[in-house]
Image (cartoon, rainbow, N blue to C red; front, side, top):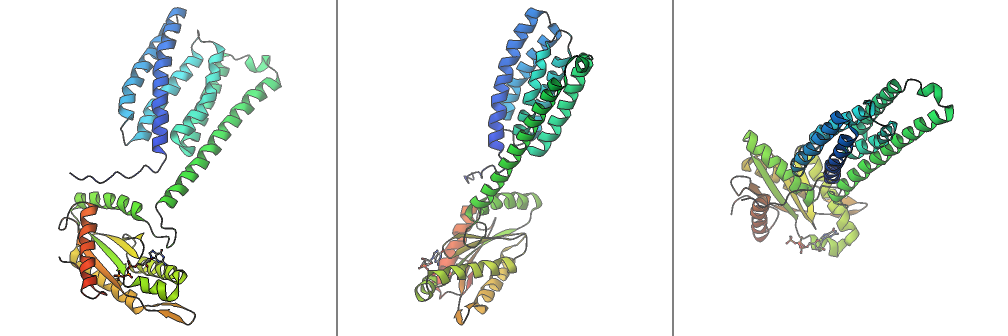
Length: 343
Ligand SMILES: Nc1nc2c(ncn2[C@@H]2O[C@H](COP(=O)(O)OP(=O)(O)OP(=O)(O)O)[C@@H](O)[C@H]2O)c(=O)[nH]1
């Protein structure tokens, strides 16, 4: 069995999942509580709806713990929840203070659904709630003063705006963090974390479409000598130069990564071993033919590359990288500046 670790969740899903689980527990508890309260008050229809909501929340909790389709299940919970809230507002026996619950709508919708969908759903339900309230208490607008209406409108508007701004900011911070966590700061190439994630994705695509998938491991030759002769700063610039060459030479669907030091790993979807060897030879020639130049300085470069193919050399990313690494080592032993795909 493949024991590759699962890659992390990028969209704040784990946070939203935790919140939804907490809400389901709360809904189950409140549903049961309000069922008792409303039965005693004689508001039987509402009481049974609340009991149903409590039972549904417990069942949903079981699904929500694991589902990959969190947004869909969130909507399955949220829409009936908000509809019940609207009904509670409108039912004849319900107190006017039920309206106060409308203030949690923007907060809940944004936290659970993110900024865009959260805004759309909250605006819709706030308008529905206001409509129902005015329909139920038609003389309210005439009885109450301007200050009272302004208070309600402004406080709702401010809650909505804050919820939106907060959630949009967190979404952006989360995306920035994901980019930082998956990018090599020196070359701006993706790092090992991103490579692992892309491998899992590309492997399932290759399985589904029965297409090949190959991996290259490239290591610059005698790079220590570059650092020793020209200094670390030039060594860094050489790595940036090589990263640029890889990016320019490879297809947009290929993924070159810097996995550490002077070693680069490349994922080549839709590419079998022979094609991967051809790509690797191209890269080797390119790097050898274009020394790093700055001012009068010219740093000659070469690299060694190991090639592995998914399905032939193993199934997991670790199998492939291990096979390609082994061949890279053979290339180094045979005198460097070469591509090896056997052994
Ligand atoms: N400038 C710079 N050097 C680095 C970086 N990461 C690793 N290195 C250097 O890369 C060199 C790698 O040296 P070795 O592992 O001995 O390999 P090599 O000299 O390339 O020799 P072969 O791999 O056998 O061809 C070491 O001197 C590291 O200090 C980096 O981010 N910047």
